[in-house]
Image (cartoon, rainbow, N blue to C red; front, side):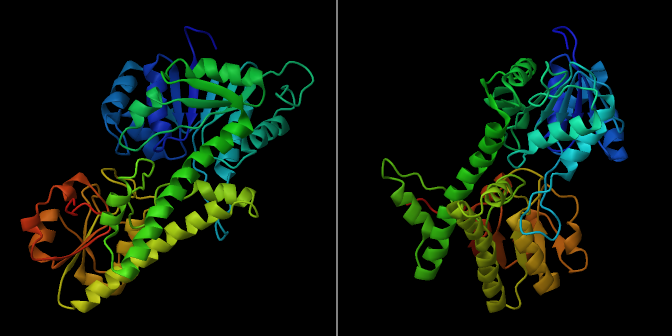
Length: 420
């Protein structure tokens, strides 16, 4: 890898991998995005995108046209490999992390790995995964000296560097947010640091790989715990007949109190997943983190119970569930509490359920045989006597009081609350 030319393979072209590949390509590197999906590869090579993200379409089109980004199903020889594949839970397990995709990426990289290369894991992982990637590469390539285990100067560098991005702001935050750059050795960290400084304007702080892995998990666990406090308050307020929005608004007048806003649960592939990686690694010592996860999952069932009761009280009314995404103004439905609740209601009440999701062209597969319909917001307001707010999309926030005056409303996001 030289200062004037750097070839990069980004493994995985999903919600993080494709924006990352495009940002790196914009910096002047020659980037190959590697994905197992032929459809994704063909889409990117046309200069198109298969995910929704602000300004990503224009950037991908530009770097593909310039020739600095291409996509392939085959792993190329490169100076730098960036692994950005999913880390879900193992099937039929109690929240046990599955690093099979990361290890499969390492297996694919191993045959083309050359001396001097840098391998970076960006996927959110349990602590120790980067070491496991190193061990897997060492197993596959005994001809290469690996960092941390070879007595001689290592032939390659291996590091862990997670993203810190918010959907809807990914391109901006990939560049401007600070980074934790964790190396298997300090030398690995320095090499990864030099790579990230090509396109990251935020501060890049070097550490060791295990600390960087834990840092990523801790960041999302911290957010989960704070959301759980708000969600638990909302359930207590419901039982006691209190307006939780007013209680939080008043409590936040204290100069050292900043309670978050409750919702129907917690979704996405980060906050709803990453804390379990900590729990799995230290089950006896992660009591607060485990409880927060349980509280946020329980909130989904609480909302489902409340919504069910409201619908059953008005058996003639059509119902509009507003939103399926895990957060506002994005098309990402992964681990979404809104999707879970709406699907359960559709399964129970069938054709009475209407789904309003401006970021969906069709309903997810679990709605297929329920009889539920995907409708626009105007249709919902005209035909539905019950409005259940599950996502705080700007479109829903903009609806004035007079347009919902005749409907019964269950607002899990507090977007239609009158400030006190």
